[in-house]
Length: 128
Image 1 (cartoon, rainbow, N blue to C red):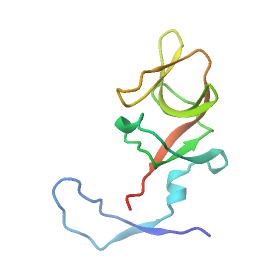
Image 2: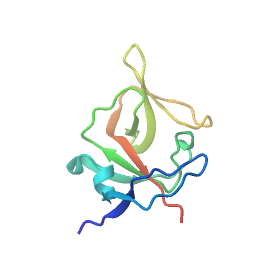
Image 3: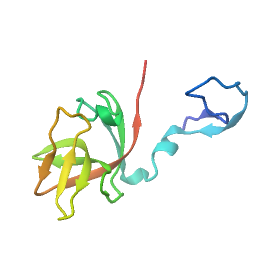
Image 4: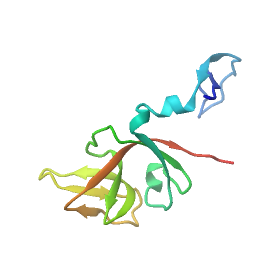
């Protein structure tokens, strides 16, 4: 059974407060909003701090789409030496790939062979 929550028409101000409107634009199913290709998508929980600079933190849930072709600078789930990692994909002019962390404490991962499991299309974070 799909659960829907109201989506307010008026965006919330992240700067100065704006007057509140009691107007609901539509009903929002968060799964439909986040998942474009259900048969090719999965969720993955994050552990670690290598992507903090990209706004991805321990405990976050990533939305990953396997049907998308990874492009330069996409956030991807890659299989490296038998382990999954989330990193930014970088391709140089010679066609070689590196996986970049979004935390300066982690060096780039140079990849001779790289298996991309999917492209990260969203992040879900629970505050409480």
